Image (cartoon, rainbow, N blue to C red; front, side, top):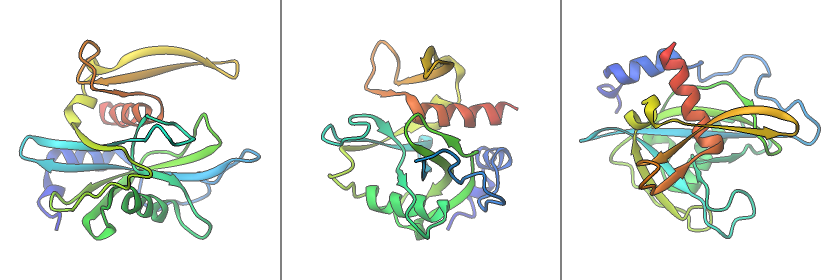
Length: 201
């Protein structure tokens, strides 16, 4: 299904920059007391206009991160691998089933500001896949060109302090700061920035 897409130079470069899908060791396992495992999928699709990144906007009624832009994902259930969790959450939130997804690899697991240890996967999904958002978890599904995220002129630097530690973050307002339709920031923007960094290397 993805034979042509996997030959695309954009995708071959991304695959070369990612870690393998399978995880050796326990880098994804929570290390802090009370921390829980979670995983997300950064879904990419090739449209006529080029490569797009699928994103969701969380409803305002949710207790955690209401109104934020996010990738499909969530808590990994008992007995699941991070990969299985990311695929299940993607199906539950936006209706894209695993048979319409090809995983390319993953970014390193990291500690979120919340109580989660997050493992991000990057994958392709078929442009023929039917997207059906769960209104309980997703207010809106939209796509942004991958080129937008990979252009450093769209990275807005921000410095914050969390629990006494200084952090540099990069917001990515779409389509720009002056005419912002979606504010892409926090963990979602951080993962896009980390992909950008790995590709730049």
